[in-house]
Amino acid sequence: QSIGCDDYLGSDKVIDKCGICGGDNTACKVVSGVFKHTLTNLGYHKIVEIPEGATKINITEMSKSNNYLALRSRSGRSIINGNWAIDRPGRYEGGGTMFTYKRPNEISSTAGESFLADGPTNEVLDVYMIHQQPNPGIHYEYIIPGDNVISPPLLAHRRPGEPLNGQLGMPESTNHEDEDLHRETDTLTGQSAGTFPVIQPGRFPSHQPENQVPAVQPPRQNREHNWKQIGKTECTTTCGKGSQYPVFHCVNRITHEEVSESYCDSSTKPIPEEEACNLFPCPAFWDIGEWSECSKTCGLGMQHRQILCRQMYANRTLTVQQYRCHHLEKPETTSTCQLKICSEWQIRTEWTSCSVPCGVGQRTRDVKCVSNLGDIVDDEECNMKLRPNDIENCDMGPCAKSWFLTEWSDRCSAECGDGIRTRSVVCMTNHVSSLPLEGCGNNRPSETTPCNNGPCAGKVEWFAGSWTQCSTECGSGTQQREVICVRKTEGNFDVLNPYECSYLEKPPSQQSCYLKPCGSKWFHTEWSTCSKSCEGGFRVREVRCLSDDMTASTQCDPQLKPEEKEPCNTQDCIPEIDENCKDKYYNCNVVVQARLCVYTYYKTACCASCTRVANRQPGFLGRR
Image (cartoon, rainbow, N blue to C red; front, side):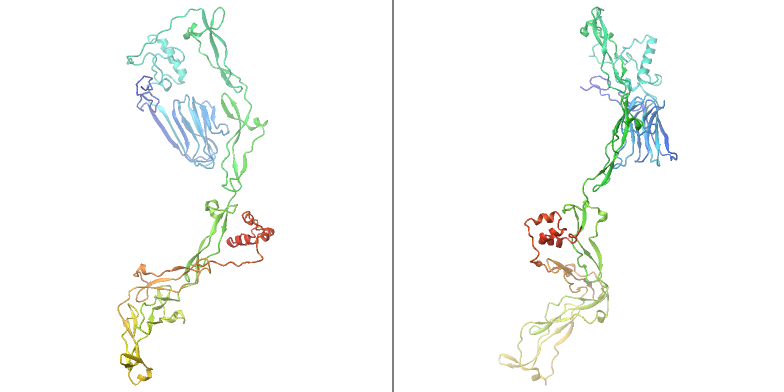
């Protein structure tokens, strides 16, 4: 079974936030607030008073600043950061409790300073701020006992009949003994007995477990043996005020020989009292703080650390004037640091051709972050603020005078013999408005192109074939038919010269046609020049959707949209071989890796390798 805070087996009682065993958190109250006053004068300014008996103390600066927190007792004794001396973060005793002083990392953290303590305090403490810059706000919080306190925290764990300060409790019938007990309680807690009513030994409720066995008083020993001080324990420190205790052994009263402690009455054994020893101060020493983070992630930076002259006394380390450490060489407070060598940006290719033949487009180039060893690394390794642009706009001039064309019609105008295929041609301005045909100059692309579906048969007369299908599936087009002079023979037709039929009226061989409105159709410009002559480039053209009246439209079928960009010149480049530029050594790759091609000797001895890498990396040679 578990043991509760009342030290009874099987008890489920726990200590509440007020420190009361089995309490309901109503015996105390939380005091909190934020000090936001605007201060003008430099120096110490009182923030808040921590009363006697306070627990769960938390004093925290709301954000990092150049100010410092300070703590001292009401008697004027400095506990932390007193007398304009800044202490290092750590644990400091004061007011009957232990304070933890925290100062987060000066570079990587944005949190402010703080004091933390569990309490309870045995005296009034004052919290100060050493004001040097605008106050970011100080949050304070602590717990103090309420009006319905049952027992002081230091007495919460005493068992019935347990000795108090080394003495057993007396029967409650003697009034002056009760007073003595109150005085002993005051000595223990450092508080007034009137402030915290005390439950005295022997006055606990009588509902003790039935299986508890009453304590058996030890038999009275004879007086032949008694307790004798034979020496003292070793001092806890070699300097700066330590402590030691007397050592008592059981001895024979007559012979003074040490015997087993069972021969002496344990209840009469003196309680060892602490004695001060080695009161002379310890030598001062330099207290060296941790190095701060390097000021730069690569390249040469600086780091700092705090150096304080400290001296140990009474188990406390105090900050003292630096002249006391003059017998020691003062360590450096700043140092250079370099986490790694910085990488640099390199432009690996020239700008590409503009993505459009006219108007505003874009062009790109290859930019890489290269380490000092010549390897390509992540962009984060280089300074992003210095990164050269790898994409930019390019203006190829206005597109006001561009010819836009449809694809050639699929059908030839003649079912046999010579015919034509047609397409639509329009001059566009700014991709939207149409111009008169002369607006784009005299180099207007042809609207027709010849086609031939094979020879035809005929007879002696003007022979007119059937009209071909309309040259366009929509909009205005033309129809063609073959009109020839033939002489019909039995089963055959012989084609004659047209003058043979000149006396006859010749039927028309072409007429216009209009099947239906086209709606919107895709138009495109001619292909641009290929961006590279070898090893794969690309060429582009503009594609626009136009309605019947040659205005911009969104009604074209996206699946039928002609390509705006296509690869070209995919064949490998054939390098020019210079018979006078060859590698004279087998390990020229090492010269390239070591970046020695900048020197004339290596550039000549490893000419082919150095030239090859220079062609891949513009600006590689002659860098120095």
